[in-house]
Amino acid sequence: MSDELLRAKPEKYQVNRGIGKPVEFKGLKSQYLFIFCGGLLAVFVVFIVLFMAGVNQWLCIGFIVSASLLLVWQTFRLNAKYGTHGLMKAAARKRHPHFIISRKAIPRLFTYKKRKEERP
Image 1 (cartoon, rainbow, N blue to C red):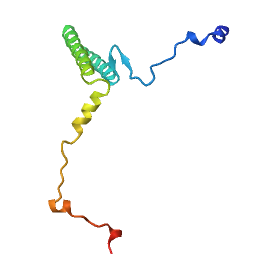
Image 2 (image 1 turned 90 degrees about the vertical axis):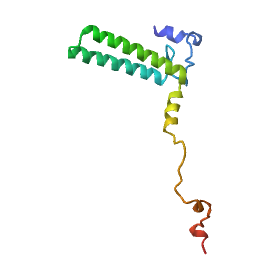
Image 3 (image 1 turned 45 degrees about the vertical axis):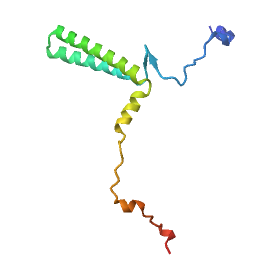
């Protein structure tokens, strides 16, 4: 086995060219993949809690199927709408102030105040 590895030509093995690209699985990119996995995990935990609480089995299954379909639809919709980093940009845009308030009196805005080292 080791002789085969030593005699192997470098052309046999492909070089990984995915360096620097976002993680992608079935069209979902980067943070949407984590949202999708976390959402499915949360839906599964809710199913377990409902089932252990004694809720009817078919009601649990109906709720989980509908919640999973909604999660899949919303995740793929967000992925198509915002792209790889767009969701983070949209969240940052919401936290950015629309305007800056200055509480100084208007004459103070136009007066020049000398620095301490410039004073005689």
